[in-house]
Length: 264
Length: 349
Image (cartoon, rainbow over all chains, first blue to last red; front, side, top):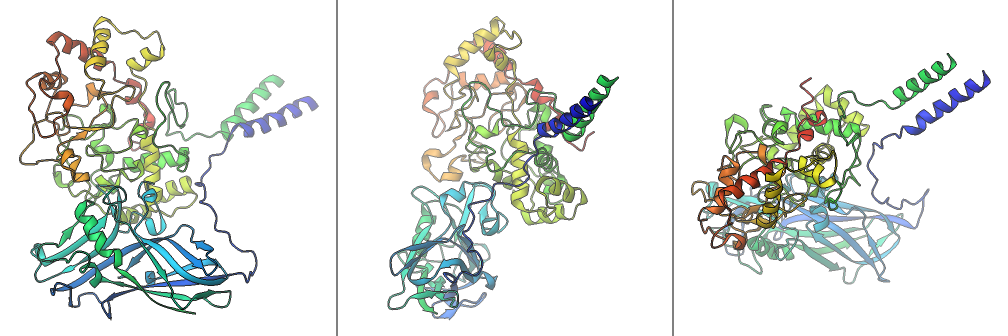
């Protein structure tokens, strides 16, 4: 009888051992090195993306005049910021992990990006990309800022719309006098990502547990129409794909963002 | 008696511990849901390394594939136009009907062995199987729906709360969960058990008859440079001389790349299960395999960017050779995959 119970227990164990439970969760991305307890060697840093039209804060449905002298209004203004890196005075760098942010003018809470777990120190410069890297454009379904639900992803030709500016202009020959600029393209000659680097000149962003500095940047829609190509809204009013024309527009937003100041 | 008790105990323990979803019948060699690389095939382009395979995710993906809530008026599912009995093509439809009976411009492609593809659609516009469903869901003549609406509808459904909970341990619906579950279902639709496959693997004493054997030899010299074994496609874009419909003027691959050299080029389709997937060509303009072969032997129209392999005279084939090639093409039908209940509409009991 003893033997039988032994066999039964063995059977029970075997039974469960053979049944590998399916993993229900996907592998977690590389974890952010979260400092344990209160560690005064880390702090936070804010980056403000203030959308402007020249010297004015950008307002929807307000008349602005572009470089060519044509009036236009904005009704939508979205862009991705990714792969943010900040550099200390000693040239060491901090790279944000999972660094993808969608700035939507309709949603003011998206205008401030907060870096966390930043090593304490004085930072002299920042660099980032306007757009989304090639790897994430081909990586399938994403979540967070890169979720395919944001309206910033093309369904018919896979890839992110890196930059989206919509509005109207009296001179636009398009239906409804529309301006529609959906700019994307993640690889090849027409790729639409543009890199920015700003040195803070005489000042630094001093990160510590006590101080959360803010890097104030401005994204100026007027710059989009100005250089290197002077945009004529009467004919250049529509773009919804990746090609040489999209590249031309991307070149125009290569100076969209400018450094304003740092406050500590 | 004691032996019997032990036997029953084993049965009970194994029976309960290894509970298999009764809706998923597994009568086939892929006895469970596992990634398959058939003998002699290259490595697939998409693996399930991140989107790890589970019965519950597959069951969710299967439910979503056959879910009409994916369309704006809840009238059309993926399965409406991708029908299993014709290898997930759309039976006898040159182009398919979307919402409100709107017609598309291209023939519904068959679905199988998708993990080996590095692009999807006739123009290759989609770069990952996970984002494939976005195209038909949002296309105005297909499902005409918005992804956020799909999420809201599924979130409001008791059935889907349960399915998402089982698959992901949370009833919260999001687009990544939807798309990965669907990729799991679509990616596990394998077809590798045709007569041709059995013959190549030396299984079940499968033999080609004389016509099939002649057809296979002819196929290798006349067709396989584009319809390359073992997937029967080279995954490239080519113009095969199909006449351009001036009312549609579908520029194919150039729609994606804007390159002049890509105009009127379309992705080489796999010829697996080809006997079932009529009508043929990207626009569904040919009705039979005979017509397809005639297309290549009749003086071929020198359309824009016509493939160099077809320049001058197309492909030389006698009428007898064509019949032999068709005999071979018929060996590419995989009846096991067509009848695999795991891929069937779960709403039909």
